[in-house]
Length: 376
Image (cartoon, rainbow, N blue to C red):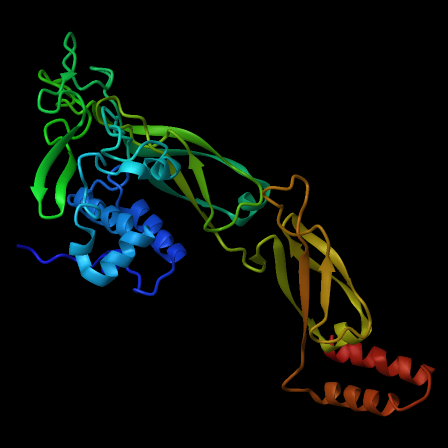
């Protein structure tokens, strides 16, 4: 006889776990292993084990008996008896998770069409296109509905029939007696793969799958303000499911080509502006790049290194706030010469001498002119 797994280990919680911790652990595992979302082999068994552990640990009396006597203390209550029909009173919980009753609790998988796979397409746009928005035409391979059989998988003139192995339920139940009571194991029907129908005369064009590969062309609208790493979800544009199943989604992943002199953080743009000593000291007008092209910016006399000049509304557009935009931050850096010519040194020395004078006399203005000519 196989060794019983500890219920606390199954849920991944310590024995001191609170009721809320047990419930959180169960919800997380249930979303991962529920047969309606996990098609891996063994998912049914794993979920049955998780649900069994939760039924015991979520009930104070059962949990106390389990802590004292182990599985023997909850014999007949920890396992699945005939009245529980697989998942018993937890079907409402799985309604909230998956939009239907729990597997085994009412045949949620009965005749359910398999949804097609989601697809991903990587789309590169320029920085300017990400700012103003654009439209792109894309081509990608996809499994689409077979035109010959209209996606049914059956040869034209024939139809799919109810699965004789599961009588159209899409699931097989195995009931067996154990020392813990009656155990009900619910698995997808191996013949119809949980669909409840089988194709006896398959379509020759698609081999009974109901799908054929083709190249699909779409026009994608890229909204203004989209950033690198964003995704655009196009519902029902992915692969169709087998034998008439609904299509999945297409996710268009956006990759933005970097701008040579602008950096982006959200809706804010940043530009590093390098000025000479003369430009920073005397003031000037320079052209800086913006998201909409170059723009003149006034540099005030005496501008210091590290000064930030903010151009409001010159940043990237907000995706969800029409008409709103971020700002452009111009970060000033002053270039200090590492080597000076004799003329430059004389001009700086003259400026240093003149800077000790009170006021701004004629002599000092002349020095500033010489300094501008030497360092500008």
